[in-house]
Image (cartoon, rainbow, N blue to C red; front, side, top):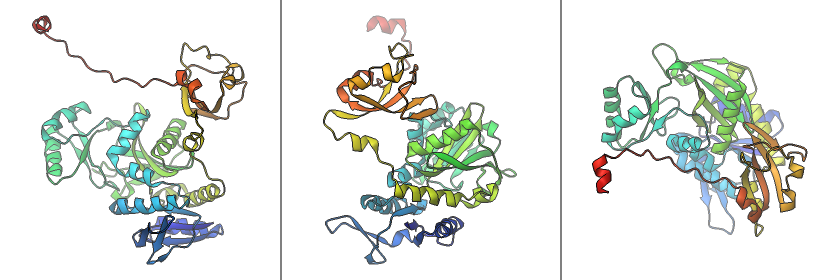
Length: 396
């Protein structure tokens, strides 16, 4: 495999470890400065120039895109995608994860636990926003901060209002987030590669510091990740569209709460804490994908007229509950089940003998007209209706 690591810091620990792991496995690997690429759209096919010369062919790239060059870096990654060069983290996935508001919006849609969060722009709305997340103390975050920079704990309402007003006056967008007191200055970093967690550590803040980042002096220890936290980390990375990600979670009374999904996670802290070859796991995954790449099923299978991919729900009152897949009649309707989701379990290519249960979600390919009646209806937002005075009701 011919591999390029896109990085502006060739001497950094993470970049060096990835390069070393690739070379040890017999791959051809180079570190290329992301800012030295030129996107070339002048010919018949998308292309890239590097340092003013045509770029040679590569099988895969591993992006290490810093926050300061997000826009240009993701444009370069997107160009590699157009050239059919494999990347574990797509441009869209990197963009999604880099913007904390966008990431939180996406995760909240998929029933991933997150700290209560609000986003407002008018100073008059700040006080009510803080109250909605449980009141002070409250965490204030810049949308594109990294390594704990731009994360502030405001102990009181007045202090929070003053901080937000100051940041907004400099055209900074900030999130207002619930402070999870039971986490006690600790969080979990899970390193996800593909569909599994390859290493996990607990980070603990020191002294009066509430941020547990290693760059803030946080101490780290290897941990055996509980199953619930492992599933949450993998799902969060997959939802964001990342195959290599560092997922940061708080240990709350209600279970794991995802704080951030990092598309360029540092490897030094977690490798030294766990003693694991995390870089090697990443290289092995990328090499396997180059040999046997995953396909976007929805795009590839939806080109046939009248056929497509849909997620079907087995409702509580459905005649399918307790019936085996083989006797469900789905095949007779020209519907094939690709994957069955049951709670947090995923069953690929389920057998005909498997009995269907209420709330099973079936990822299917088949005739759209046959699947239409089984597609779950969109959830309607519940509106809070204030009781009107009797006099006003009479007038209406």
